[in-house]
Length: 446
Picture 1 (tube, rainbow, N blue to C red):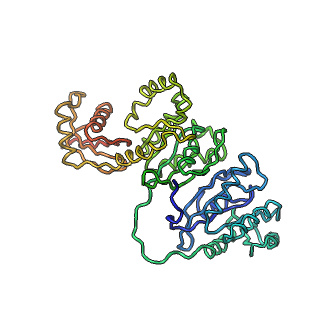
Picture 2: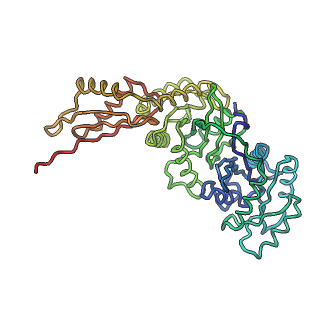
Picture 3: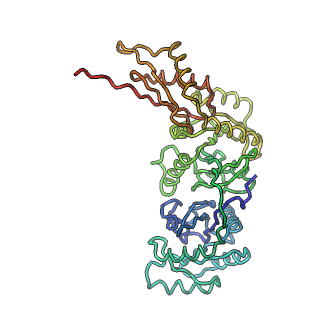
């Protein structure tokens, strides 16, 4: 169930236009940073993608969309549908046209859709790089949408006036005082390409939120959606599939891979989607390592479970025991994103991961536990010396991070033992545990 849009306080601006007129470049210019994926070929942006923006102290949400085409077929038709959905959900629309080529039939088709929506429209005549091209921008008056704002998304020319017009088109900010409340949990849907991440987001949202196609790499930008599960609201991010090595990707795929890593780092919980019909791969392990190193909560989703037979399920269990032993703490759901089978279990395991990720242990309980652990299983003697854990404290939660003050450096194997015992004693489901050692400095004889 998607959260009603009235619960989102910031006004929304949808950026639409036919393919390759510079929508994503203009979005980057509005944001003041390279966020949307840009490449000099049409169709790079395929989903509607939301970004937070601010101008003259006013906050709003910019929704970048794929190129709109009235006669589109196949994937292009689904991309066009995303643009129409963005228009329907927006408070105002920023319509981008290419001033260097003039008005085309496709632009007229977009205008008809905009008029039917009855939303305020701001017209941006893009690619006006100098004063000589302003006459071409003036010709855009014939679209009947009011004044065309001559801009150069590439160089920033005229974007200030354009943003002033956008703010004027947005509804007035609600008056009154508001209590500061914590936003929804951020959950990143991650996994290698073509394992069903977008299908999962669509099923959760109850709408065709992401473009789905059998070809891998359909999702390029992260896509955000507010979803309610078991009474809790989460902000889901569907990310581009991480490839085996970032340097193997080229063009927009390279930037999409970096953006996916950024989505992991901005998330609190990661839902790792694995195709249950395929062997757990090096790519899967690399993504799991990225999640654990980033200190994010983790839920394992074995997708396409309805397509696996008994023999495959038997071997999958063996693979999990062998390859995913280090992530045995992550709750697991076997499900089908396409049919929705076992989807109702996802909310519970995400909440389990959130509680483990935020879990705190008092210093008294922690040191009582460490005292028992050291007494029953002291560190092995190394070089004639036996380092000891003198004191411990939990420095933070999210993820649970512990600092161990010791008389010397601890072996990695002993640290893994401490982590295992911490889990046995206190739980910490669905979250990595980070242990930091601070060895006492050796005293020097003077």
